[in-house]
Picture 1 (cartoon, one colour):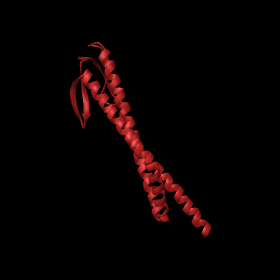
Picture 2 (tube, helix red, strand yellow):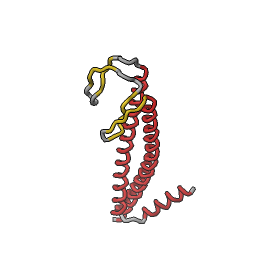
Picture 3 (tube, helix red, strand yellow):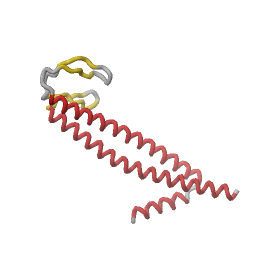
Picture 4 (cartoon, one colour):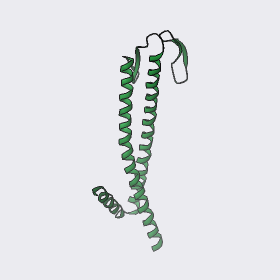
Amino acid sequence: MAAKAKEVLRASEMEKLSLDHLKSLKEQADLEVNLLQDSLNKIRTAATRLEIASNALLDLSLRPEGKKMLVPLTASLYVPGALDDASKVLVDVGTGYFIEKTMEQGKDYCDRKINLLKSNYDELMEVASKKKNMADEAGVILQAKLRQVASTS
């Protein structure tokens, strides 16, 4: 009930704004929604990459030592190699730093990062939803005010 009262209050405050202020409020809210949507897409992409890495770790753990395979150097460049020690992996922790971890620690690292990203995604989604509602509200009020101005002239 308090949330509804707050939304009504926000709408009533918007109705008191001038056309220029209301227009700039709508533009600002739309810009913020676009930025939040971009951030949501980046989080989703990062989580997908971590899930792929986690699955790759599982796949590596099942392969026998000495198994020939292609090793990725970049996203599009692979070189032939052989699995030396499947119990240890290098984990990219950012800005060019790698840490040697056991296979289980590597999987745990991926899982923790995925959970963190999903948590951040959920929080950001809630903020984006509120901003979108505010932008829509401002748009409706702006259109009503513009129709009112047009009918009085």
